[in-house]
Image (tube, rainbow, N blue to C red; front, side, top):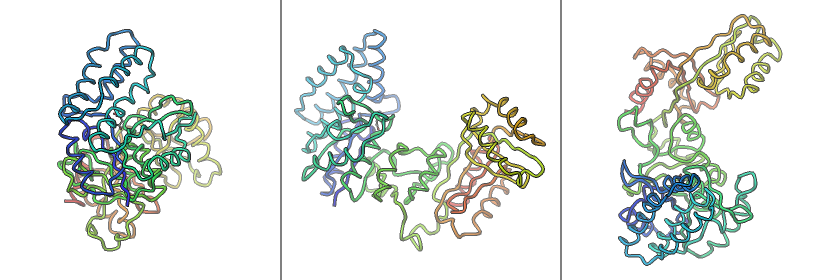
Length: 440
Ligand code: ASP
């Protein structure tokens, strides 16, 4: 049994958090590979070390002294080390970073030092070996990860050892450091889990899993106990933010379960993400048809009406071509017999609206083109909704009862989600109504 654990910034923010991490790791002998983030915020008004590192780089670039900012970074790590009674020689590490900075260190190399220092400290604290991400995580020229090379390298390095690895960065073939986009330590953890064929990838953060709805809209929403990778894609696309969006692919590909856990509440089982769940047929959360509710505002709908449109060969292709050349992604396409609608980002459409309409007029000669602005999309996502003919009806009844007008409806054949368009002003109310009727 092998478990790969990733601890996010809040789990690495202070000596007290390091103590919690150690207790978690030592609780289970299978927890042998630990990936860490840079120190995050200790409270609302605190700073993330990675933000400070980017800030340092900007100071140096514009010739402004970064002493104060760099001092904050040094202080944080030295404080953690001293409070834990570790002997790690951070002074030389910090001095080396300072010198490199003055010699034109790249932004990526500097930004990566937060994870590097965290991993050095955590390795000493746990008594694990430190393995630098540059030793195994290899980027190609196009910015993608060379998985084959990286997996083989990590497998070799990890054999029979307990490791701490810094997240967020790796190296190009020439050795230069490259980072993922922000929040990328999640991806490092997923790659390490995939490389080592881990039994589970535990992603430790400061919430007890993925919440069923946005806590800014629904008060105290419950966490999702189990979610499939495809449900999670739907939920994240529409705004549920827990993991970096590229985290899923490496683990999903190898069918490795991903477990989101809370460092501050380690006995909570969190959210388990898997390809599918065998117990769905009669499992413990059977009463729950909906896995989660997500949504986004700022959509517009372009509706094209023309008599005979549905039998006009190539008409839909022409519409898509127009939107493609304008660089507008079409997210949903609800349609009627002679009406075809495209749901697109409202702010993006605004920039090219005149061109879009004039091209549609010219190439399609429609009877009418209408634009409906300020629409929100709300989606009820749930694998258990399939084969439940009563679910869409219940959704519509619940919204209708609250006087929420449904502007568009879309449900795919796999029945994993019901997508509704509502007026922007009804967005929060629609999410709340769905939560209250299906979860509470
Ligand atoms: N420290 C990096 C960031 O703040 C990466 C991470 O934490 O995942 O974006």
